[in-house]
Image 1: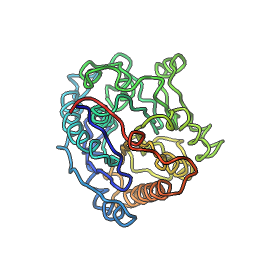
Image 2: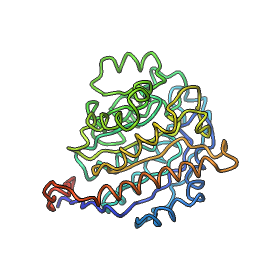
Image 3: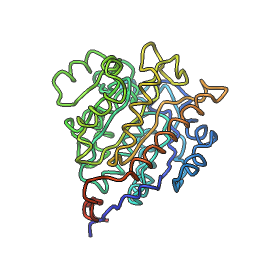
Image 4: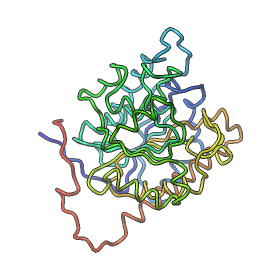
Length: 328
């Protein structure tokens, strides 16, 4: 029989995905432990959440893997995704908001695959300075971190494209990129022909984070369908948050990131959130971990308030509050 997921607004399912296998350098595999040590779970409980901790997946570590220059560490990445998928399926089935403390961006594939076990469609809001639309055929680095969105929409290494049995994992029209600043020429060419919506950092700064976020939520059809939010910390300007693998110049100032992030997290149809690219090795004093935990707690606290606020719309019945998926 089909499984109905009844959303539990006061519950968070916490999963650690300690991986740097897809990344451009080591260190991000330490992020889940650092964020836990900064008090994330206790602070979420303090603002009113019931937190169920599904533990950490086995660590998957950065390596140069010069034998596979077009798709480095693919075997390790797939193993990590299988581990995360199992935990994500249980977490999604519970009806809680799923929060994945990731290392590299590839973990989004495992989280989305777990969600698709129960939801026929899940849209994707990709909050990132990079489009991640390279493939093994176009990559300048061979790092899967720069190819994650391409694989989600069904283009790239067969091992990842077919990780979800029915490619694509998310259709191009159902993906919105937010915060773009760094694009390789093949990615730029692809976006010029794709129905994927995309928002550049400069435009977000001009409009302001809150207004730009509202427009992006419309683009991703958030009012009509559940969506996943991927939050790559390197979207923040280096002067505001240097503890990432690939900082570079530019980026969004923290105020715009915060304003946008709060709007995204408050939305009732947010199904899951994964956080990627925080690197504790570049944060010896732990100030970055504290700043990130404070941002997560602030946004999730605002979500509780928004979901509890009275509305003039008719209350949703059981059928409207649930979603049917594949058979259990």
